[in-house]
Length: 334
Ligand SMILES: NC(=O)c1ccc[n+]([C@@H]2O[C@H](COP(=O)([O-])OP(=O)(O)OC[C@H]3O[C@@H](n4cnc5c(N)ncnc54)[C@H](OP(=O)(O)O)[C@@H]3O)[C@@H](O)[C@H]2O)c1
Image 1 (cartoon, helix red, strand yellow):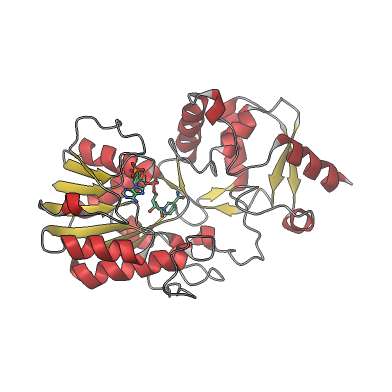
Image 2 (spheres, rainbow, N blue to C red):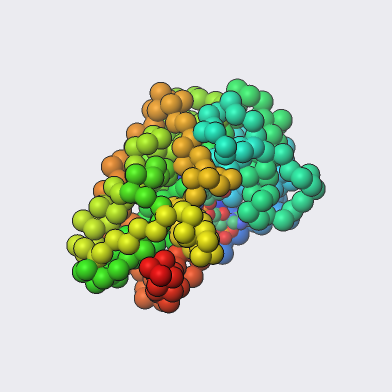
């Protein structure tokens, strides 16, 4: 297949390009050239800022476009309208956050979020999900149901993840002293869910090859992974055996700990996002989703993190600083 990839050089897109190449397809990249511009030197690269200039896409035909960097319905509207006559199908990387709520686990038929302000261009924690839902609508509007493939990943993890939300845990263990305290949120039995970017990429390319359409939650199987399993996998991968200090939801909340960001992969069981990590994946499994074992994701992520230059090994976007962790540990023990 001739594939046009909007984005493609950071994380999810980079794995999509690699999966496309591994399967023998021919990707063309479109981006601004600001992020890892030399990553795929052999591939045709079209340049432009999708928010202001799509002229580089004025000509050319492709079997499918894969949109990895669509966040605003206006920008997706413009690319979909421009490409609809010259591109077979539109694969949009959406998100599990597109669902209206997380009081109960979502499958692909669950209602989607609606923007409080339909004209907003501010992408933040509150608007990100409903904006993704609005982007999906634009894809469907221009490409129709049969030519739209809407991929809704959960937390995407693995090597090259810039968000630090998963790498924090294997790295935290690697930095720990044997027997030293390490703060763990919630309980060992808490259900965790994510998708390894490489499994996501393989599924997306396979779904295009198979001519699939419609929406797919692309996540690990609900209940497949627990926090206790993650702790064990981090200990095995890092070779460290710190002393796990479990602090329950209520105590952490009372101490002002911030779910998801300060303590990645922690969503209190009673909170607004209680079932975010319990989304249904039966439809994607039936369509060919294959999930690698947690141990592989943890080991590969740790190996990637260890290979980063020291200044990039910091956790400044997600995770606890050591001082904050010590403060929370001391308070939790009081
Ligand atoms: N991480 C998660 O847990 C998660 C979960 C669910 C869904 N998602 C979705 O997965 C995608 C993740 O993105 P990623 O960053 O990993 O994708 P990526 O395709 O690897 O990287 C972003 C790409 O977009 C390009 N880009 C950014 N702004 C652009 C613009 N204005 N015009 C043209 N190109 C632009 C960047 O290149 P230049 O900078 O050179 O332009 C880069 O190639 C997003 O759609 C996100 O919503 C992520």
